[in-house]
Image (cartoon, rainbow over all chains, first blue to last red; front, side):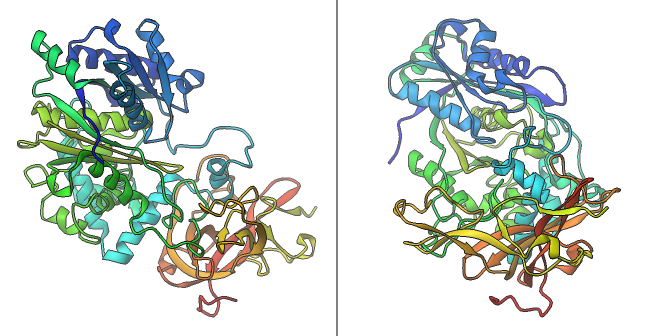
Length: 403
Length: 163
């Protein structure tokens, strides 16, 4: 079932870093850039969708209102979404629904975060019925520990090596060298990765993404509005990039892959295991909406929380079969100049994770890739791009952009 | 003064009376079982125990019964924590000593359950597919209490079959 398209008229980002300022500042900067990119006045926006942050108090829980107020109340409706790392895609989906239902022509989607140093930790307090609190209390199971469990599976199932993982980092670091929005712009060598300390075996510090401050924003409009707007104004959105799919699927029971922050997988003792796993279903739903398949994809931004996880996504998105991701990487297919470059932005390897902004940053990057205006690494003649991302507690996120 | 042994979480483990247990010498104390629930209609297990309703689609009306889970399984994956995890984790030792974490697949329940691995085991001692068994060990202590938690360790006899 394909879904009607909406236009990406403008995108904007605040550079990622460890700036230590209020997240609202980053969101507003990104929003103003996106509006300027679209050539749209804030007063013409009919809806704001904010992706929430859980680490910045109440304003973070009501991100839609927070950004609308900061930009200057205009009386428009807002929504605030949270789906962990998938929050941005959920906000984007809410904006798309408003537009496709005819309730507005122009929607602004914003996500921004200010993150603490070190491991992402649960909220404070004694919360014995919260699995996210309990996994730290009872196990000391950090996010990198989950990433490491999945990485170990690649080694065991497919013969992946830690050198393969390092090659992902080296590739992404090279991609991000000239990206003005990236936090880390430094070439990385095999030795750099090998010298970095092990955090959770088999993953070293340079295999794991940092946490960052940052902000990203997207202006979505109806296709009609976009065409009229481009005919009558000087927006930079030419060629016009469209949202052809937004997948926000959840797992199907029983989900037999260990997910953050759970203590166990679902049991498969009662029902058969679904033919397509959760992460595969994320891409499947996006391809179905767009009426496209993996062979159509020219460029991708996937969530490299760890280097090994990027390889998982190649397979989950259908770029290759199970166990073939290392070969795809080694053959240079996913490197700039290859058939299907992945993470030309530099990925999380160069950005670090700013949770509610990250899924939107992927959309910003692909918009530039499809327009041919990326300020860093630029794909050659890309017309179809896909993002993939997953938020803990069962949130899928995949967006397909086309032009 | 001896500390009182208490479960680190209520309702997730069945153990012999804790005040009768020997001290944990680090190798773990046998006799602990994980407590789960089972959806009677579909035969699906839940851990941590689901007590509200069966989460199996189409079986929401099923009775949930409490069950003890298998105490042996095979290693699905593993890692370690080279850096001290953040609060509310409390390190059992000062200075902090890295420990392993295991995801163990239970054959009967067809599910994978996480746990810490007993101290002294390193990732070099572990291999996906090896047999693991459940024991009780010390999570951390405070002035009055020793908090007890389930842990995995390589099975003594090397078999992952059901006990």
